[in-house]
Length: 219
Image (cartoon, rainbow, N blue to C red; front, side, top):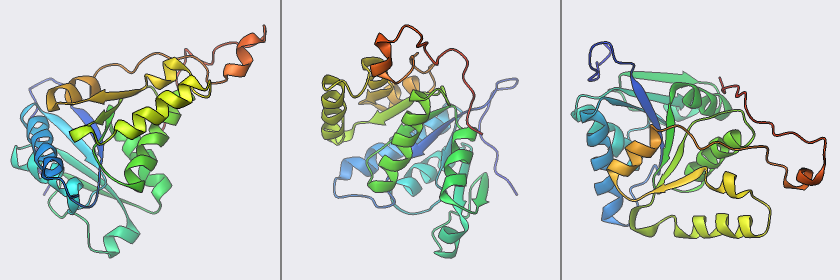
């Protein structure tokens, strides 16, 4: 039977997709803050969309949110179910065929996106939703939970790309940084920053127009 999350009568449920490591990492603060985030989301009636595993930081966030009575939607591929890492006590577990389908389903279910410390997969998923925002395919906030300065090198890279005129300042601002649980939730549920088209070289062309206003949501 499906678990029920906390939600006030008449309220529309809000959900945050959380991308993070399938390992706990070497710093105790990672697990500590993942637990705090999950607990706070559960208490506030904010649902979780995540990769559907019971391991690492991803499992930590899910377990903390479930313990607080929250709603958790996992999205996992058949391959990972066979690897026996699927969480068996979620509100709903969506099993899909491919990683591409997994990303699209998570984007469809979530109102905003949060990245905690992680590796290749965390960066892949988070940078993809940033790119979808940049291209006007999506208009949902993206927040990096910068625990112990973990994302400092990434933000230095984004600043360098902006200084080199490879990334617009407005698009640089799509990657938002939070240093507390309260800030993560506030930014993750706020409207996404407004942006124009991504092609800086076209700005000097009179016929170019921002690809901007109408946004077709992924999914």
